[in-house]
Amino acid sequence: MVRERPGPGLYLDRSYPQTACPGVDEELRILVDEMTERALPNFPEEAVNPQEGAFLNTGVSVTRTGESWMSFLVITDILDGREQQYVDMQTRAYDMATGRRLTLNDILADEEAWTILQQAAQEQLAGYYLAEEPDGQILAELTSADALYAADFTLDTAFLRLHYRADSLYAGHQTIMHVRVPYSSLRGHLTEEAERQTDNSRWQLVAMTLDDGPVRLRTLRLIRNIRNSCANATFFIVGDRIILGHDLLCMAQDAGFELASHNYHHAYKRQNIGHVIEYRDLLINELSAVTGANVSVMRAPGGDERYFIEEHVNLPLINWSVVSNAQNQAVPWPPREAQRLANMVQDGDIVLMHDLHEGIDEVFLTLPQLLAERGFLCVTVDELFAARGIELLPDTVYYDAKTE
View 1 (cartoon, rainbow, N blue to C red):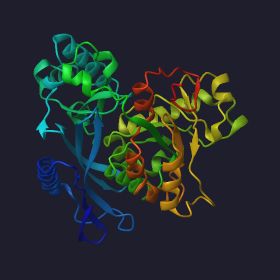
View 2 (cartoon, rainbow, N blue to C red):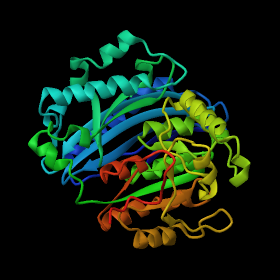
View 3 (tube, one colour):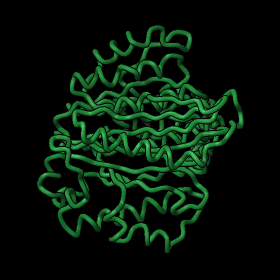
């Protein structure tokens, strides 16, 4: 990461991906610099809170599928006063074996595929910001055949994703909207090469999950470190902490990370009796108002799901199969913990970590690379189960996505 300090409490950060293809690296470096320069007129001359600072970040979320296809979601955001004040994005996808840039025509083989894409875009974009109605005419324009042909897209282990600035449909919202189209729904309508490159059975997958956030600064470092490591993750958010980090939640959402429920209050056991639906809806509505995104999975505080099942929370309940070690809410030696986790993780595992634990951000400086050396990709919970062909059912507990 390259950091500049244009003034007290002001931080201008750029991250440049490094791949095995110099031509791709150069194109992305130029794009990162162009997007940073375009954002600079919107950067404040002084931070609302100099102690917390104002940040202009340009970073790249990297995903891959198959043997050689890799996608890059380049995002510039401005964070100030605990709000995200500005966002911009562009995407690139390449066959890294040749350096050739991919288009949707390289992926979609027939009209039925484009129809599936259009229907998914219409439905999912209309479902953002639950308390707001999108403009029907603008929605139709964004999802027209011509617009879809030129849409920003990326490819991960389970989904073709379309990406849109939220203010293109919902005025005043500075976030990114993501449309997910499972490869499974496109089977038989993909090009021959896309059928091959969207088969990810060659990869071992692990879902990295982080509970109890957001946490000022540490969650920011986590997002950067995870993204810079070409990894992905799921953040299980505590609803009454949303107010502490509107900007961080937007940044995580924009990066393509999954935001999920860890209950509105970090309430254990019987404290949830009679409140399950109330707490669920409070979190969903508050998170949607900030990021636009809906919630599709939940983790019960303490991993005790019984009351949520009894009162029909109506969300899949995600437990875990591997736990990160901590003492007194801190990871004593992050490099050693990264090595321990990398050695013990198995295909399909779900790893439990905590934003609250000091040093957890440093674990991600090395863990994704250590796992990559063993043939693993770090993915979100939704990617993990979709890639393994496992349907997540409401009021059902999942500890992993192992298929044997």
